[in-house]
Length: 267
Ligand code: 6PG
Image (cartoon, rainbow, N blue to C red; front, side, top):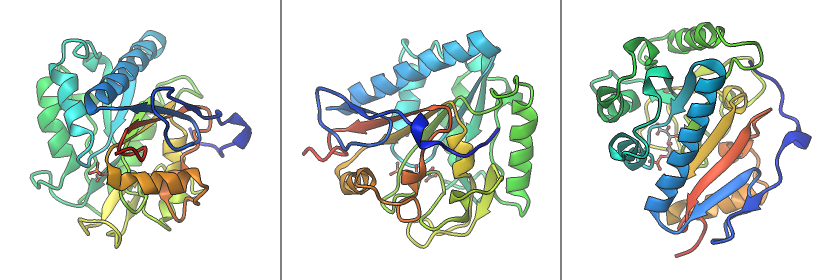
């Protein structure tokens, strides 16, 4: 399921003609306004989900918390163009979770459940919340990933589409600067300490960088002027220890950044 990334497998950047953006590894999809960006991302999601269902019979999607993706999640549920997403064939995973009860407003899963799960026909056994409030959370989620993805043919036993955000300290999922979840472990999921660089300061559980990089399609989705200088530092070669999101290098998958004009440094 996991392996070391190879630089020569990384695609050369191709920037959207309409709007210059940071020259990041992979492909940058930049759009002037939020609506167009949601459309671009949702359209890719529809194409990838249909391809995976055709090829494997199912689709493994991992979603992030944070503020940025929720308007997109809502759009997926109410826009008729995107209602065709094959939820009945989808397994829904979470990239990270805070060590709080599900009822807490800090729980990523409870918000995702409210917006997506409760309004889709996804079978309950295909919904995989991360129970981050117990000492063995990471072990359990890792077992669930291995057991579920293990039904896939070898080499295809990975997440199909991972939607990520980025914090102002460069974290993605709950992989913070200097995190043990960044480097060469065989772990797919790890419990991590409460971050000192980002709120809320509660311990987390997160997919590791290895797991993210094993995925078929990795989509960092980043909006807002406050993120522009961080993305520029990533483009300028910051290390993953400094800015964890710089560690994204899918081994045999596609890396596609979805950025609005503000995140590209345009006012
Ligand atoms: C979380 C996330 C985290 C998030 C970033 C960006 O649970 O908080 O998974 O990695 O995506 O912190 O958050 P915003 O979208 O709120 O800026």
